[in-house]
Structure formats: C-alpha cells, structure tokens
Amino acid sequence: MLHLNKEKYGDLTSADVNEDVIWKVLVLDARSQAILSSVLRVNDLLKCGITVHALINAKRSTLSDVVAIYFVEPTIENVLAIIDDLENDKYESFYINFTSSIKRELLEEFAKKVSISGKSGKIKQVYDQYLNFIVTEPNLFSLDIPRVFTKFNDPSTSEDDIHLLADKIADGLLATIITTGNIPVIRCPRNGPAELVATQLDLKLRDHLSNSRGSSNPLIQQRSVLILLDRNIDLASMFSHSWIYQCMVSDVFELRRNTIKITKFNENNEASVKNYDIDPRDFFWNKNAQLPFPDVVENADIELNSYKKDAHELTSRTGITSLNDIDPNSSNSDTTNIQQAVDALPRLTARKATLDMHMDVLATLLKELEAKNLDKFFEIEQNYNNPRVQAQFLEILKDSSKRDNSEDKLRTFLILNLLLDIPASFVTECENIFKQKYPHLDLEAFKYIQKFKQIMKFSNMSSLNEYGSSNANYDANESKNNNALFNGLSSRLYGLTEGKLTEGLSSLASGLKKILPEKKQLPITNAVESIMDPNNASNSSVQLTDDYLYLDPKSRGGHSKPPKRQSYQESIVFVIGAGNYLEYQNLQEWANLPNKPQKKVIYGSSNIATAQQFLEECSELGKLAN
Image (tube, rainbow, N blue to C red; front, side, top):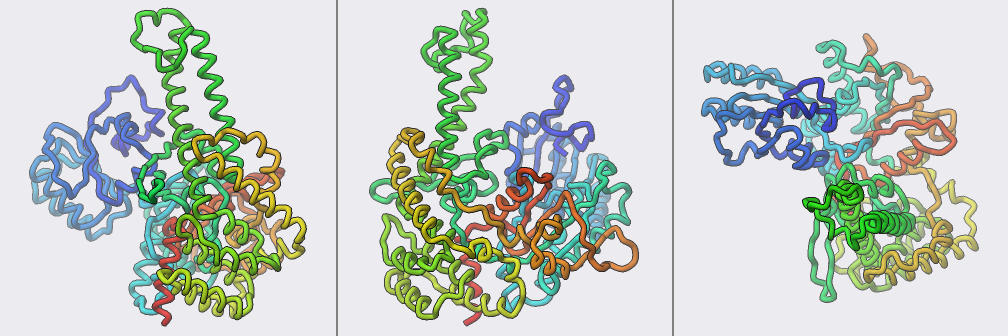
C-alpha cells in the first residue's frame, strides 16, 4: 500500500534501493493510525517515501505537486473529507485505501461526488485493504473493540446492538482471514456470542469467495481451523498474576501497541511516567518475552556481559578506551581496525540502547514486586488447591504493603472463588476484611463472579478447566520447600534493585529453576488441543469440543455438517470478550512443545485487556445484577 500497491514490494527490506523513491503524503484517521503504529515507526515510513503523515480531520497544508495515500475507515465523514481535498486540489493524485470493505451504497455515493467534482482523473486507485485489526507480533492480533464482554452479558443490551457488535467482530475476522490467504473451517461452542459471530462470518466468507477469484493462497494446501471461543470459557486467567515477562510488563505497567508505559515512584510516592517503544527488531524482547521473570533477569546479565566483551574487544583492537571516543568522521579511518569499529558502532549502540531499556524495565519491575508483594499473589494462585492456601490468603489480606495492593488481593480472591468451592464462612471473613481495611475498593466484581459461578454450575463448561486435576495429588512438603525458595528468591532479588541488577545473579542461578511455575494448560489451550490434536487431548475435552458447531465456508449448500475429528497444523484462536498475554503465551508454549510436531497458533481477541480493565467490566456487570 505504501508503495502504491505495487506487488513487487514484499516488505520494507525488499524495496529496490536503486529505484527512484516517490515522495508521498500519508493521510490517516484514528483507527488506521492505531493499525500502523503497532508495526511501523517513522523511519520505516521514510523508507517507503512517506515524508509527511497527518490525520484526515486535522488542518493539513496543500501540497499540490505531491502524491497522497489515504488509509482510512470507509465512513461517510472520511469520504466527504477526501472529496473536499479533491475539490480543493490539495494533492497531485489520490490513492484511496480503506481499512475494511466499503459498503456498496457508500462507494456509489463516493463515485457520484467524484464525478460531480470533475476531477476523477486525480483518483488513481481505490482499494479495500482488509487491514482492520491490530497486530503486535506475528502470532498475536486484536480487533481493538473494548467492553465486548460487558455488552454481550448486559441484559439491557438490545438484540439489534448485539447483532451489530457480532457483525463488527465478524468484519474484523474476515479481514484477518483474507490477510492470511487461507479460508479456514470454523469451530465454536453453541448458543452464545461465538455462534452468533461464527454464522455471520460464514456468510461473509461465502460472499467473499463468490465475489472474488483466487482469494485464497494457492500455495496453501492444508486447511486451517478458526476456533471461536466465548470469554466465559475461563475468567480466572483474566485476573491471574503471571511470572512471564510479557505478562508482568502488561500487568504491572501498561503494554499497548508495542509501547511500554512505566510509572515510577520516588521516595515521596510521587509518580513519573516514561514510555519505551518495543521495536519489532528488539532482540532481547523477541528472545525473552515468553520466559519466566527469573530467567529474564539471568539472561539480561548474560547479554550485558556479552555486550561488554564485544565492546572491549572492539576498542582494544583500535587502541581507543571507549566506544564514545570513536569519531566516524575521523581522518584516521583509513586504518582497517578503525574502519571496522566505525562500521560496528551503530549495531553496538543500538544493542546497548535495547539492553539499557530492558534493564530499566526489569529494575522497575523488581521495585514494584517489592512494593506490592506481588510474588505472594502469584504463589497462592499457583498453589490454590493446597489445603493451607486459605489461611495463607487471610494473612496476606490482613498484611499491609508499601503501596496499595488491594486490587491485587481482590483478583486473587476472585480466582480462589472461581476455582474452588470455598466455605461460606471464609468468603464472609474475607469480605469483612476488604470492607474494613479497603473501604475504597469496589467489590461489585465479586458479586458478578458469584452469580457467574452459579450459572456455570448448570453447564459443563468447567470440564475444560483442568487446573484442579493437574494438582490433584498435592505434595504439601514439596510446596513448603517451593515456598521457602520462592520467598528467598524474592528477598534476594529485591536487594538488587538499587542499580545492582546484575550483581550476585550467579549465586541465584542454581535455585531459579526449582521455583519456576508448574507448566499447566489453561482451559483455552485444552479446547484448542482437543480440536487441533484430538489424539493427544483428554477425553473430557474432546467430548466437549465434539459438540462445537462445524462450519465450512467452502462447502456448497448447507452451512454446517456433523463435525469430524481431524488434526490441524494451523489455527486462529479468537476469544470474544477480551483476551490477555497469559493465554497467548500458554498457547504458544503448547504449539511449540519439544519432541512434538510444531503447530502454528495465531491468538486474537476483541481486545487485549489488563486485569484491571476486566475487573472494571465485571464490576459494571455486578452493578447491573443488583
């Protein structure tokens, strides 16, 4: 698109550097800006000849001799803005790209107004790009539609609004599927939002196939499967505290469209905010995002030492004491060693900047762990079916921390309620402590969770939740040792936060592996396994997913047929009503299990929500239930 839709341009690295660059203006709206900003930086736009980018509803200068690329939603407001630009000769030529398919009526209105303007020759292209989704990494996407869980579960939402929302989600999934070039079989549970979206998507895919030639990639021989799931499959994961680096960054800070927003606190508890962009080429993030936090701290130390060694070797060969002393414009650069140093400098500088960023993120994470005692919540959630966990939770509930962690306590309390049948007396005691100690805390989410659990008891959805079975034979002694190690690790890690992050890590290395969390499959992973690899899935999961709806948009005649068990190598797994990084990482871990054929699993959701955001949704539903 940024190269005027020429097929020869595969990606930013494949452009012919010898070809004259056409300088262009890029006109965006808020939606397309969000789509682009997660994958491209300003330098990437420059490589494509984009010298100016501006919002369509902002005041823009007239550049009558420059080519303009529009990348906007197909709305009447955007169409009228384009017509206005055309009539005023704002740009030399117009290349129109819509984020999703433009409705026929609007396209006809657009054509009519262009014809009336008498300047149709300036419009060179009009494309439906089918890019109406946000991608933050190769196997993760979001439709960026918030509060879907609330809207689908709010009894006051009208039937028309529900169908409009399902249609909007189906449009986003249509764009995703067209981009992959592989029309999948669709599987989903019956009688819920997933079925509503699946049936609308099936119709859209059939319509697309009948109106286009060769829409799917001829190189893709094997069919993939789209697994649509309702958020109700598992609420506990939405509240969980995780020990995975990416999940912790999202939970403790804010991770949105590949930007980490860190809030730091000084001695007076005054906050300051710092933003870090995660570049797609961030080597440390790409290698460590999916690893447990202790491993990442260890790897940071290894990477830093490796950088120091490489920098030292480079400077010692040139006789320069520091990389900062290298002058790329020096007249002495005719010597081989100096030239090598000059050539290597940009790479080393970029590497150092990446490591400095992650060192800051890790050090701030450690401070937050200490200030809120976050490791204790993770520990309880891991060992939730230990008979002593209730007593441990009461102790934590009564304890105070440096910074308010009442919301973290509520999240763990909700998880215990979702995963265990805990005595009413324990629930009442916890509620009383919450009300006395944290009068500011909104407990409406708990009311909703109680109601939700009652509803789930009447369905068999919980059989996908195998949290309990994996820990059925609980070893209390092993847990005690685990906890001792865990607390020991935390206290030693806390001591490293004052600028000494990488000191003393070797002494921790032997204990690190012992306290890493037990690998468990989340309910969503159990469902995906039973559809993609039924031979290796549990009988209970397979029996449940056997009842899922089966739709094949490529089949003629009827929309569905009896499901048949088969294996799939590729899938798109989509959750309607918020997703999170924990489920994404759990699915990737399953898809890449050692000693098993690797599978490709793309994870998506209506939006990627933090635990706090999902708490707010549940709180709203709790108030509606009163």
